[in-house]
Each structure stands twice: as C-alpha cells, then as structure tokens.
Length: 347
Ligand code: NAD
Ligand code: TYD
Image 1 (tube, rainbow, N blue to C red):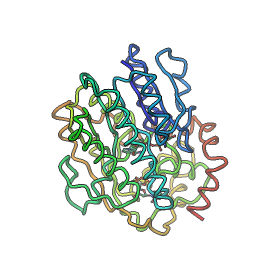
Image 2 (image 1 turned 180 degrees about the vertical axis):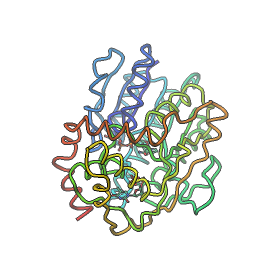
Image 3 (image 1 turned 45 degrees about the vertical axis):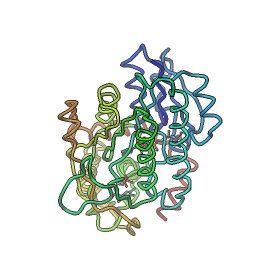
Image 4 (image 1 turned 90 degrees about the horizontal axis):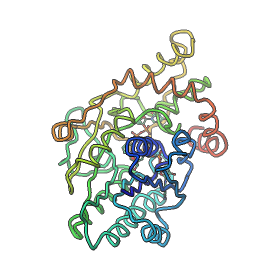
C-alpha cells in the first residue's frame, strides 16, 4: 500500500506517521508537509531512516504540485491532517485558514477522485477533523456524530467547510471517505502555542500563565497516542461514508487543568508546592471563545472497540517529563518567529 499522510511533520501527524511506519513495514508511508512554523522534521528523527518512510516537502494549496504528485505515486489511501490548527492565529489571519484547510483539502479531493476514478476498490480518503465544528455546548450534553455543525471561530469554520467538501465528494462522486472529529489532544511534540505546552514552557521559564477570561472554559482532553491509535483503527476498519467522534471522556475546566499542571510541574522541577500556581494571570478573553466541548465517543467504542488507554493524570505526567527531557526541541521551536508571535499575542 502507498499511503499519503499530509501534515505528518506536525503534532498529531508525527504520531500518526510514526505509528503507521513502525506498525506496517509493508506500507510505503509518504509524509507530505509544507513545513510551516508548525511542521518540524525533528518530530520524526527516530523513524526517518526506516526504509518504508518517505518525506515530501510540498504545499497542499499548490494544485499543479498535488496533481503531479498523484500522477507520480499511485496512492491507495490518504490520511489528511495538514491544516492551520490554532484558533488564535485564525482570528488574526482567517484567509490562511481558508487556503490550507478548505482549498488545500479540495485540491487533495480532486486529485484522489481523478486518480481513483476507474475503480474506488480498496481506496480511502480519511479526513482528520475536530470537535470544534460542532460549536459550543452549554453546561449539559455531548457532541454526537449527528450534532449539527455550528462553528464559531475562523478555524472551526474552515474545518467545518472542509468536512462538508469531503462529504459532498462522497455523495456526488462516490469518493470513499471517513471523517473523524476529535477533541483536544495533548502530548509530546505539541507546539507551544496551545494551552498545555505553552504553559509548560512558561512555568519552566517562570513566566506568567495567561488564562483567558475567567478560566471556566471546558475542553475534553485526549492523549495524542490514543488519537493515533483511533486513526489506525478507523483507517483499517471504519465504514466508508461515516463519521466517528473521538474523545477522552475527560472534561476539564481550564483553570482546574492549569492548577493540576502547576502541581505536576512543581513536583517534577523540585520547586516549592504552590510556586507555579503563583504565575497564573487572568488576561483578556479570546473573542468568540467556545464555552465547552465534550465528545460522546460511544460509536467508535461500540463499533471498533476503541477507548482511551491513558488517564489524564498519567498522560500529563508523561507529557511534562517529555518536555523536561527534550529542552533542546523546546528551545529550537521557541526561538526566532515564536518570540515575535508571543509578544504580538500576549504583550
Ligand atoms: P499542527 O499545526 O501541529 O500541524 C499541522 C501540520 O500541517 C504542520 O506540520 C504543517 O507544516 C502542515 N501544514 C500546514 N499547512 C500546510 C499546507 N498548506 N500544505 C502542507 N502542509 C501543511 O496541527 P495538529 O494539532 O497536529 O493537527 C493535525 C490535524 O488534526 C488538523 O487537521 C487539525 O484540525 C486536527 N485536529 C487537531 C486537534 C488538536 O487538539 N491539536 C484535535 C482534533 C483535530
Ligand atoms: P487551545 O490549546 O488553543 O485549544 P482550543 O482553543 O482549540 O480548544 O486552548 C485550550 C483552552 O485554553 C481554550 O479554552 C483557550 C484556553 N487558553 C488560555 O486560557 N490561554 C492561552 O494562552 C491559550 C493558548 C489557551
């Protein structure tokens, strides 16, 4: 099998590429990534010499390039993760989200449709999406696969749009697809613009922890390797033309999560209990901030037997240890452009 994985140099993509390259030595894994600020080949150092792993630098927005690539390599499947992924950046620059998340996805759909048009047998386009497309929950309820789309940020609107295009290609052209909508991931190689790695980095450096609004916003958190395992299962055993929700059954208000993280960091850094907590600073809220996300992952559990394997406490501890043991990685990704981004967003 020739398998194209897009966005494989990013956070989740690198875990997916690693899992597939190691678990399926008979598959050729082609990692296509533009290496934006979020893409980093250091994330894949440990597997870069595997004979079944191939890296291709390229942009999914570049239509001639994508067409040429699909002409050259006979892909049997696509797992599409490449995206602009950060809500705060989408508020600053929505168009770059439209380009990559919408136009880039349609370019891939067109190329797959064209190349596979003789026979869709054993072909599959897997689109990786987010629970944020469903919008915001109140205090009660869970997102199921039939919850109406109601995106609130430019990021979630662009992901919702790409999901609709994937479905539309399934309906109109019978392209075999699956979509998964997953909750917030955390773990190694997470770029420190997102809550958990940003706060880990700030605690290490004794910098303020900028909690948006009152900190009562709620997210459902999943350890990234559990997401990669779900993607493996759905890719191989999920039903075509179906959506599966993936979540951690693990809801946390931001402020409670941050306090737990502070306790873990104090312990691991050998600092006085309570010292990291003193860094918490309430700052101006994110515009259009979704109150609560929570996933009902019953379908993937019942149909494919998937459930999270890592508790949040275990996952958070593993994550903190990884960042402390990989200070060089953290230093590299937080130099240069990151400093500019940080002062623009947080000063
Ligand atoms: P990320 O930002 O860490 O990585 C994105 C990767 O895509 C990077 O390697 C980047 O270089 C690449 N990329 C960006 N634009 C590109 C382009 N135009 N052409 C080719 N490559 C490009 O993102 P992530 O957190 O790993 O998320 C991966 C996917 O999973 C995204 O589709 C995201 O919407 C989805 N998702 C993320 C989460 C989460 O919690 N992070 C949760 C659910 C779903
Ligand atoms: P984030 O990691 O950006 O993921 P998402 O917005 O996709 O859920 O943010 C998680 C939560 O943490 C969200 O409610 C916003 C909040 N947050 C802060 O309070 N401060 C921060 O500096 C960041 C990045 C996020």
